[in-house]
Length: 293
Image (cartoon, rainbow, N blue to C red; front, side):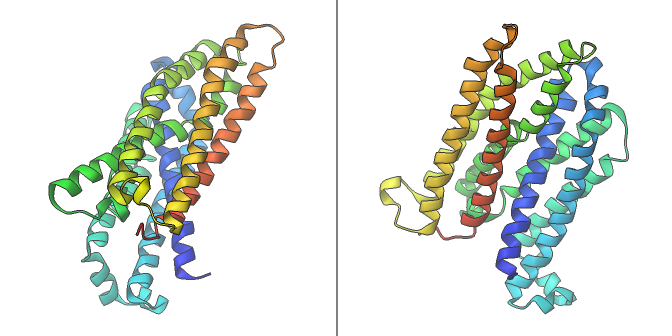
C-alpha cells in the first residue's frame, strides 16, 4: 500500500471515529433526559471507548504518514529532524492541536458520570474544529481564510450531529421496545429529530458554501476528478436527505399503528442512511487529496 493510499484510509477512519464520537456524545451529554443519561452512556460505552481510542491512534498514524509524504521517503518517519520539520509546517501546527484534543478524548474515558460525557463531547467537537484547519478549507489566509475555516468547522459539527447520531439512533429503537426505558428513549429520539432538522440544513448550507469557496460556481468546474467526485457526493447526500425525510414524515407516524411494519422499515432505511454516510466520508477522503483546478 502506498503512502498516499494509506493517508486516505487513515483520514477516513479518523473522520468516522470523530463523527461517531461527537454524535454519540451529543446524546449522552445533551439529548437524553437527565435520568436516562447514565443508562444510555452505558449502552453507548463500547462506541465511545472505541471511537475515542481510534481517533487518537489514527491521528498519530496520520502524522507519521504525512511525515513520510512530505519528506518523500517512508524511512524518514524514524528521523527526528524530519518530524521537527513537519511539525513546523502549518499542517504540523494544526495537527498538534488535533492530537491534543484526541488525547483529551482518551483521557476523558478515565472519568465517570456527567463530566465524562461532557468532556467527550467537547473534545470531539474540538477535534472537528481542528480538522477545519487542514485541507482545502485552509487554502486562504487572513480573515477570508478564518471565515472559511469557521464555515467548514460548522459543516463538520452539523455532519457529526446528523450522521454521527445514526448509530445511537438504531440503538434507541431497540431501547424503545423495553417498557422501562421506552418513554426516555422516545423522548431522546424526538429531540434528535427536532434538532436534526437544523443540523441537516446547516450541513447542506455550509457544504454549499465550502464548494463555492473551493471550486467556484459549478459552471466554472472543470472535468476534474475532484469535481466529478463532488457531484457524486452531492447525489449521495441528497439520497440521505430523502431517506431522513421518509423516515420522519412517512414512517414515524406509522409507529402508532398496531401491527405496522413502519419500525422495521425505519431501521432498515436508517441502516442504509448510515452506510451512505460512510461512503460519503470515504469519498471525501479521496477527493480531499485532489486539486479542484
